[in-house]
Structures are given as structure tokens and as C-alpha cells.
Amino acid sequence: MIESSTRVLDPVRGFISSVVSPVYLLAESPYLLSGAIGDVVATQDQLLVRNQQLERQILELSQISQQYVALKSENDRLRGLLGSQGRLPYDVLIAELVGIIPDTNTFQIIIDKGSNAGVKPGLAVLDAQGLFGQVIEVGRFTSRVLLVNDPDHAVPVRVNRNGVRGIAGGTGEVDALVLENVSVTADIVEGDLLETSGLGGRFPPGYPVGTVVSVVVEATSAYAQVLLRPTAALDRSRHVLVVFGPNQQQDPAAQQEQTPPREQLSDQQQYQSQEPTP
Image (cartoon, rainbow, N blue to C red; front, side, top):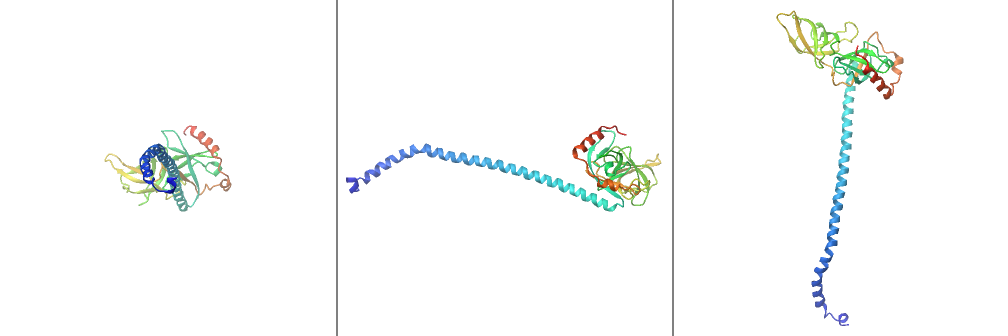
């Protein structure tokens, strides 16, 4: 009754509250501490999940970026081939490298165009930089190409600067050709560009073959040793041009025939790779 009508006990109640408050705080501290720890753990878990999500997004973006770079490089190569096509007076066919002959004694590749596209043995093959090789064997859906650096390959050439003619042969090295039977009096110097001469009608004239990197003349020899560096990217090009000469125009019916499914192409490629080297 006194409490309800007067404020006499306020000091007592304040004193008791001051004494009891620490007890309340101590009793509540485990609950408060557990809540704080729970918030910290929850925040850490959320950060870990978010970090994983960001890492996954970075990987996905990296993959997209790599694909973009690959597509851009392929687009640049195709543009180069199309530019090469514009300089040729003959029909051409764009082909893709799909296999390499596993033989250390020869340099041959397999392309994804065969007789169904009108390809025949003897046709010249170019990349965006120069002469790549020639077709030596044709299947239904693939063809085998002998590269210019193969020891069995030779091509008539001429010096772009003065028209001196010769024969460029393969050495078995990916970055070296040799100019055969060059007289010591021939006007050939380092840096000269050699191009196809067109003699024989197999290779289109005026296409780069190699650049002279060394000319060695020995006093006891009647011939100079001339080494060339191929202009074609023999170990890097993925797309090439198959050139149909003036007497080897592509069959219009073959142009309309569809490319076989990839599974069928792979079977044919495997068969070609197992055949003995000619």
C-alpha cells in the first residue's frame, strides 16, 4: 500500500537493481555470446559460399575468354586464307588439318577434304603465308598431304628479286629447305625471297616458298649451299587451301556434296593414319 501511494521505496529499489543487474548480465552472457558467435559463423559461411560462387564465375569467364581468343585466332587464320584466295586465279578449297602421320621419317598431314570435294593427287596446298605442300593420296572424305620440308618433296622456284630459277627440296627439318644444285656464280644472297615459278604446272606461280637464310660457297665445290626458311607455318597452321590448277578445276557436283559426320571422318582419319607411308 505504501509502495503504491508513495515513492519511499524508490531508493531501496534502485539499490537492489544496481546489485542484481550484474547477476542478470552474467546469467544472460552465455546466450548473448552464443548469438554473437552464431552471427559470426553465419557471416563466415556466407562469405565462403560467396567466395566459391565468385571463383566459379571467374573460371566460367576465363573459359569464355579462352574460347573468344581461340575463335579470334581462327577467324584471323581464315581471313588470311581468304586473302590468299583473292590472289589466286584458280579454284580453291578451304580444308582443315585433322591428323598427322605418326612417322618420324616423313612429314605428312591429313586434311578433312577428299574425293567427295573434288580433291585429287598432285594438287598444291597453301596456308596464309606460303606453299604448304601437295596432295599425294586421296580418300573418300580425307586426303594426305606431303609437306614442303619432307625429304621427298621438291618444288620449282625462282628468286623474287632477279628471277633466278632453282629447285627447293625438303631437309626433314621443320624450319629448313635447301636450294639444290645452285651454281657458285648464281646471284642469290641472304634475305632473298623464293617463290613458286609455275614450271611444270602443278604449283601456282608467284607464291612464297622460303627466304634465304644462308649461302655457303666452298672453294673446292662447284655448287653453293643455300638454305631457306619456309614461309608457311608448317607446325602451326590449322587451315589450308587446296588449289585446283587450270586443268584441274573443281567438279561443281563435288562442291555441293555435304561434309560427312565427325564420327565418319574420325574413322576415315584413323584408317588413313594406319596406312603405310608411300
